[in-house]
Image (tube, rainbow over all chains, first blue to last red; front, side, top):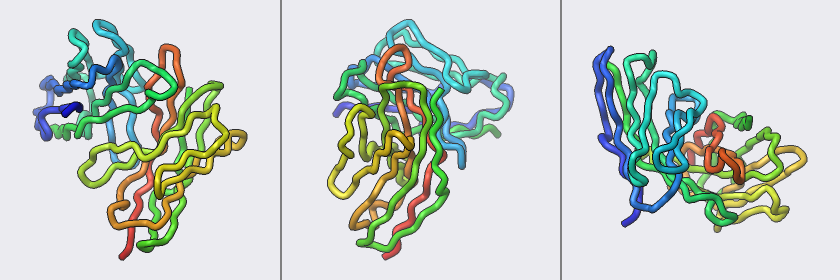
Length: 115
Length: 117
């Protein structure tokens, strides 16, 4: 079945360490996105990529980095520069825009906790 | 920049009754999309309904319908014949229709819906 796979589901990180969250899709979607979800704040965009080897900062990119070496993969690294990394992270993907193809599909998320 | 506001942090409804969730938005774009997503306790985001801004007709999907008031920048979700499985967090979201920012979603803060048996 086609879909988006995020791993791991739960992740614990010590302060000062970098950690990478995985996101893989087999939907042949061009665009991929990373969102952060905090309680009471909805989802906020961290980074997005519309084609391979290109990506753009979202609203809260500081302390994060991404790569897009393959169409199927869009890993997110949470660096030690991110001051408050404990959150729920959601990856999404979508097709190139047409009138009908405007839906974003989401993975099941990764819960990151700094210990 | 787009903004989306959901002014109801929590709502509740009796099973089989109707409930309306409110959403207002602001955008300078002439062509955009509006969405309602559902996030159940599993935290999987599920698309409930979608509205193209250029369409005047309100979107419907089975028990779910929207009231899209473009001039007022309002996009409410009506759930009819509420079921226990409708209990979830509901997010209103907007997206530009094209250009370099297509697909980027701007979300509201969410509304927790409780369904009472």
